[in-house]
Image (cartoon, rainbow, N blue to C red; front, top):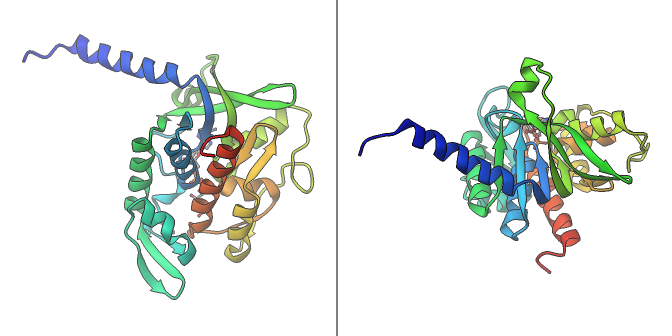
Length: 261
Ligand code: 48F
């Protein structure tokens, strides 16, 4: 077979355009492909919700690859083990209640499961703003990360979504941009963005899961963005809370979408 570079180029352009175009109107737009975003998108797609995941970097996995201080192992609590089992991730008991997993295997398996379930992942795309209508978030404002990095003045494109999930981790970027640009109050105890507190895993892990939910009409928080928003603590390289938070936000959104009832 003789290779034709123009066919290669056309294949990429056509296929990407089809995928992108099909993602312009979604049930759920997840922002941030760390553990909470990957898990949330997987459960949504598995239940047949139309879901895409937008990630600023080229790579998915967020803060999981590096384990703790680049020692590429993660720790999970025993309660979270069934979730990793479901994704086919190998875990090993360390002490009573504590399990470890290889962080590279974990990210790879979460990502593979999300793709297989039907999640469309858009890497290299940054969400720079939100679409807001009548006091409700109705979608994303996106641009290439390369454009953002180069500081080019290029107008963005928009994605409509019934629900948006801020799974951007410590920076909670969507919540912050929403608050900064609009005169709004958030559904937090103090009605505004709090910023995260210092390391305290015992407090941070349950708080992440309990407070996963809608922070403003149409906008949900999951993962570390939850604690950053409400002023909860950080937890370090223990990941049960991230997995449970992703699973919880998917369940809540499926209820709201009326899917899987
Ligand atoms: O930080 P990250 O892994 O979020 P997470 O799911 O997990 C947190 C843990 O990794 C760890 C921890 C708990 O053990 O404290 O830090 O809450 O992943 C967030 C992803 O969001 C991307 C970012 O590149 C990262 O991969 N991201 C951040 N802002 C944007 C974004 C944005 N504006 N647009 C697109 N992606």
